[in-house]
Image (cartoon, rainbow over all chains, first blue to last red; front, side, top):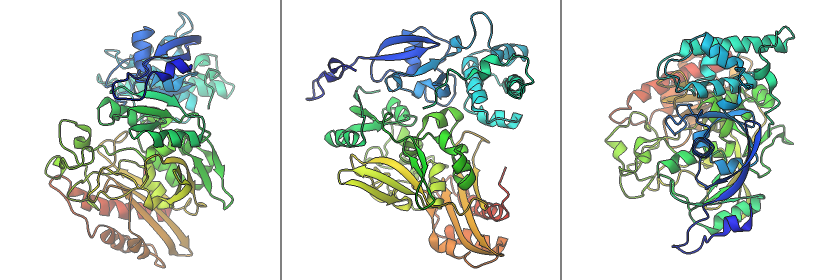
Length: 196
Length: 331
């Protein structure tokens, strides 16, 4: 952050605060420099400035999970994340999960299991499920239900969502155990997610 | 959201002096509660001090066999830390009963301690609230108070503290490390949060500029006999109506020490050492647990919609103590 970006007058009552800061984010693998105001949320940055409209603004208060993306490999609510705080981070959105036209296994499983109706919550559900699989904590359908409770589906497609996630989770577990057929490769990649 | 300036702190001392300089400056870490409150216009800082790059990310063992948890360790990392799972399953379980996986990935240890109440009136800027606007009144006392306090409330505020993690930390008698104007100090957990009294705008005893740097856990003695029981309207992702952190140390067939902390019932995690002492030296029995429950709730006061919490809390205490003693955790 350069001096000029942070200085504009913080003294006196009439002075305008600095409204623009330059930050660097790696978004879906591409490094980008972007201008943000301190109050710009990561969700608004993605949708309004970068035109990545996959992440949805549902409640805008961290309650519905429609805005879920991965930051440094971990699922978070982008609506409650100030973009400026994540300067330097790697962000993966639903647009970054597929390899070109090849669907991510979770995307395919959601189709196969009819795991949505209106589809509004789906990008958040899939990003959240990807985070869940990377976390390696869910072992059973009950675990999936509990650890996906931050993603609401107003259409009530929950049972199919759980089935879709379980299928990919199973494929990942088999792959980790050396019995896989490679279908879980995206989900178990993990190389994107540097832990801090 | 109101407009504000932003600066990133690189050192604890810099963060504290920056906060001392501006009355309406606020630290931001995970931001899960703060950003939400800013969107609601309940929090209106004029300056954010980003503390996320401070070196407060470690979980390390202390010399006395306890654990020091850096203030920036996320709720998820703390709950899943192997030493926490092994020695403080009560803490792990309490954390995992709260919020969602996304929020636990964001929220930090220090921030969890400082989260604000979820009282509807506190959040709704169209209504009075003594916590938000001192002196404006408390509509909860005569209004929608199903989620509100039954212990330690005042005529000025009946809000509850929303944290699950803090209920476990109260039972474990954690110590909070704080850096402020006068340097570093250690605050016993029971002295961090306060009752509303006539100053409900103050959730804690911290002073302006104070920064929580770590939470220290004494050596774990309750790993085999503890439970966190949370009763709520939904099976997941809801605040507690009543929660109980119960931890017991057994010697032979008798109870050497018992700790019971309650969540969802007061302005702070609620403990009563006199009530806990009733179990010392006794054999575990439902009757003994009921005696503790009665003692813990003897001064409880219900309001129009939350009177049910008194019976609920008593039953939850009895059940949690039973599960803690048997080592069988609730589902």
